[in-house]
Length: 620
Image (cartoon, rainbow, N blue to C red; front, side, top):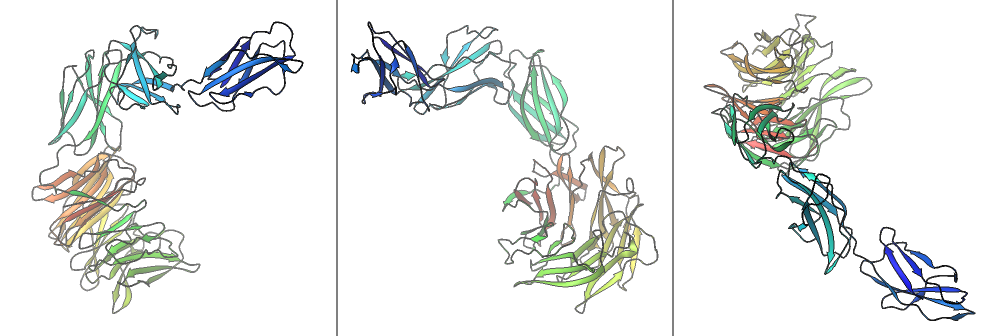
């Protein structure tokens, strides 16, 4: 009898065929072994005498390179006949799988990848051949230098733009190879993108340079878009020999540049980069220091020693710090508080003011850490409200809060009260009592100048108003010039006061182009508010984020504005307002706070994204 066996790796089964015995037999028995072990019978019942083929299916694939031996014999009247020849099966090496190839503009070549299911392979061999338009190889196969023996990917950069290529992979274990994969479909090579794409910051410009690779390109295009918001557009179409371009007349901010090459039929997108023009002369030089990560944070305060404390508005929480000795503070019942509810006093101890509500009243509460424990005190009792009432507070030189509170009579200035502590008791004053109908349209803000005199900015439907407290306890009201809001509302208002006669108020409204926002500053000089100065216009963002600060000595003002070109810092110099872009990209719902430490050094804390935990202190 002659036995043959054939292994099908795809089905994990062995097919057998044998010749019929000359003469008569009752049937056959088939035996197998893992060489060189003992044979065992594979069939449970006698194989009929007229059958000449069979199949053995494995429940799981047998180990690669295993040798299996098989033999068969006839049985007649319970007497075994002689054995057939031994049919040997060697389980093959498992080949590579999922072979894919395609031109990668990012990598600048053909990116080839595959999976490696073999458990015993010690290396893979990737081969390449040129091919005709149908994908049939037109040159001998040649191997490519993989970075490591068991690599599962390779970028073939040694390609010609006028040729097409196919690829295949073979697994090896010692001197045994698997079957080669089927060749990939033909990969055509488009014009090769430039490399070494680099940018150089210049005054109101960005200089770009690159190294060309393509021999077939007929043009090079440069694209530019805002790094934070907006689609890129072509800003220059250049001849294929060009290796540089200067993008002029730029507003300060970050831009994303791309470089593309085309041969008139196919085009390739090259690398991209983010760059900004040079900062205005006189801008602060800031160093970025990473801070401990926080997944959630939306309020911050700087200590006189230049150390940051952080909090979260909802749920209302002040986090402990590595440099402070307070524990986490989070009141059990909070109805409303401003995002900037956290302040640090001159001893670097935290304070907060928030509202809590019961069935019968709303309580304005001051919480603080006294160096040993957290304490609270009621500041004001109000009737129950069904909306959030505006609260603002500052700490005076003694570390005691002064508070501005809306008492909730319809968003009118007569409903604003000023609260301060006198002889251990909280007293309140009305800012204005002459009008029964004087509505405001935004969030009133409270400021203290270095003498602890309070000043209030109130955005109304018609203008911006300053209310300042006089020594006799009365309040003086001034309307800031030319501060008419867009559509009756401001996106943002804030300010700083050096003294009663010197101040800066910042606000943001729609620009004359309704697709843009405008960021303005109004300065008070010798007691008189000057006409507004436009600091910047930029594409409407949908969100408004600005932070301003005054140095303790009253000589330096800083304001950071979130624009579609990044975070822009404005500082006032004798030559006017200097403009610089903060070295932070990847902004997505960022948080930032501008402040000065006790030595008049500027600090800006930035959490670039609500989706990451990274935090940086940009400081002088």
